Image (tube, rainbow, N blue to C red; front, top):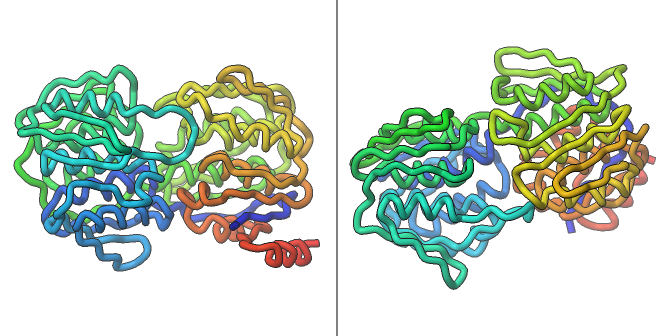
Length: 431
């Protein structure tokens, strides 16, 4: 079993290049099959979820060429199967994007029900509501969800709850529907905008992405394009919070500072120093005492739920009592027991974590319960005294490219090991 093992207590200092946004790239790869011409996507993150999605579209007949590890040329003209039951696709939540893209193009799709991290209920009801409003019939059974329509016709769709996945999925289904579609109470996240921009580069007519009202004029077909995925705001935030927790100084490069405003605002409240450039942000926590604050996760432009575990790790080292309220997912504090084993003092009441800051964490063996919590526990380990081992790193590898290499680049003492011998070797080297 692969593990991360690290020796903490050293401030992380240096710069790191941020990869393409996983959440945007997954939807963009799914949308690329809607064209029968070559679609050249660059700045793809080299992570497991992307590999699974690319293999899934190959399984249904799409042509996929990888010029290098960060790009792909996709052509959907050879798709000959509209049932996506690829063995691994059910392991990633974003598998549902193939419903929207295939339904939009072929008026039919059947996809394995999605999995992903167990951080709480993420039902498909808003997705199916949108598909049905466009004229499709939707059924679930035997581990699959299917959608079918004789024709898709544009309509007005109001989302009862802001949902990134439903917004993107309905948008993909609607771009080749007849007439005009409007999506009200749409999600505003940067990856929603990125998918809309990608579809527009293929000939779609989408306006209003990034606002709560998206308008779509249906088109007959989508053509090929070349497109670069936006930088990953969550990867950037993870390294920014690693700088805070270890009292270091890290510059995240290849970022869009606007996308990081909620993340940087909480670091400022915690006492960190922030400097921004056109495509970089520097976080310094040298010689400061971290201060407590209150955080509530909200849809963009609010504080991102995917940064909540990392925020808790930082506030666990602050001088005072903080609160973190999780308003998006109901099961996102599973990591707290592991963090408390490292010396943190965090108490969860309903959807609120009450955090009493401690002077330091101590190394321990902990389990990564999901992607972002796993990364947060790595940050805790790098801030802790002594050795920390993080198990179940398969979750972390789903969303962070070259995680150990990038951390070592800013001074971390960390290795990925896959057996007891490698673990003992690391311990010997750092002791």
